[in-house]
Length: 316
Figure 1 (cartoon, rainbow, N blue to C red):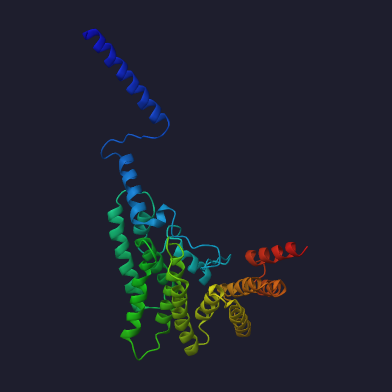
Figure 2 (cartoon, rainbow, N blue to C red):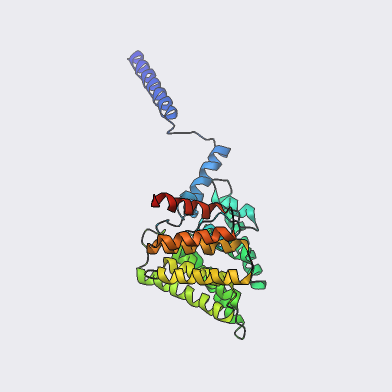
């Protein structure tokens, strides 16, 4: 009897060993000892995906035209900055970079990274309170908020912050703070499209209206405020039924740029988005003219050249 029991036990042990080997070979189980690097990385990865949806593959603006998703070959332009706000793990936003990198990837110390990220957000607010025209800090601030939050509501802090700056100086036009407020509203509207259940169209349009109000106020007080003028055309491009207004916005901006005699690197985006807006209306000839006009001002610009070549191919 004892011998039969021993044989049965040995068989069970062999079967268990075979099963463990098969599971490990299939990659379904990776045993980590307590406190090992593998165990810590696994825990951090899970924590990072739970605390930061963008790290789990969410948080990207859609390319459908419902929400802004600009691109450009010129570096440092406003269009690149708008895009970077949504890319919550792709770029280093500036101060406290260790916090940003730690919160965006599967690294140990997720809680410590969140503390550093909070400190970075506060640092950005201090910088922007002192100098609201600091564009680098503005877009770094918005990216940091997106990393630290789970949904579009993460931008509410920025909206309230810039409203507060405006209220603190009631006798001043606060043009930079108002522009920053409008940009924060655009960021929130765009992020809404990444959520499983978006607000109604009326509510999204409401964010757009408030952003346009802020940009319009800035332009009325300073017609040479390029960023606000570009942002107005940019919002109208994505606003339901306003693409025609967008073409007028960008065309007027192009005229202003050329009359100014300046060729700031970011000016190239006016030609790119004027062409994009004309394409959206179905006017390919006007789009081609905008791209060609841009190439005259910015020879060798890759994006303008590619867009023009694409139109030529379609016309054959």
